[in-house]
Structure formats: structure tokens, C-alpha cells
Image 1 (cartoon, rainbow, N blue to C red):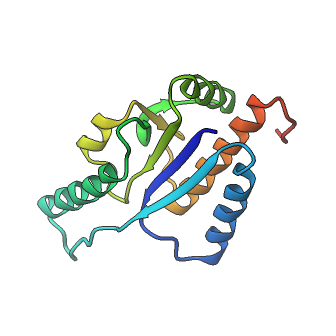
Image 2 (image 1 turned 180 degrees about the horizontal axis):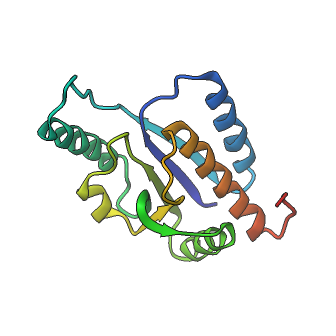
Length: 159
């Protein structure tokens, strides 16, 4: 069974986000082995300089990279990445699963992803040019992964 890991920066602070994550993780268990890993959000000082922001991105990037396995296929969520329709996400997951048993999806912190994480990514995916709160991006990602498995299984799912 395919192992799906979602590595994200920061912890959820709201029960309604936790409920949404739990629901999609429960649904996904019928199709894959899902896991969400929350890495610590690096502290950004008040009145942060560009160097401070760079240090935060670098620190979070190191933590993200330490959670990725050597054989993982890595998909980083990046506003500058490629946009996919749900059916394309389903095809991509199916294609990846022929050669890989693990996919790691990455959601960066509020300042984005380090260059090292972007370089490690096998694919950079975008949900469009809008900015989403990271907790919402996580729900959208989990929903799209679930939708992809439903599509690939030929099962009905609302449109």
C-alpha cells in the first residue's frame, strides 16, 4: 500500500482544522497509509530583517528535509509550481505509485520553502496564485489526495 506523508510547518491551533484533518486521514486509510508530520515553526523576531527571514526559511527547510526518506517522491506545494486539475493529480499519484512506495507532500511555513527543499522536490505543485492559510492548505491537500484515490478507484465522489 502506498505511504503518503504530509510534512507541514506549524501546529494546528484550532479544533475545527483538527477535525477536518482527522476526517480526511480516516477516509484515506482505506486507500493508503497516510501520515501528517508537523515540524516546528521557527521563531521570527519582531521587526525581522531579510537575514532573519532567511534564517527562518533555512531552519524550517532543514527540519523538513530531515523528515524526508531517501526513496520518497517529493511534491512541494509552491505558489510558483505547476497547477493541476484533480484528475491530473490522480494520474500523477497513480504514475508515481508504479515506481515509488512513498510520497511526501511538503507545505512550508508562512515565509515559504527554502531553496534546498525546492531542489529536493521531484515536483512543485500549486493550488493557484491565491494565498491560503497553511491550515486550510493542509485540508485542501488532504481532500485532493483523497479525491485522487477515489478517481483512481473509479468510485463516485461529488463534483
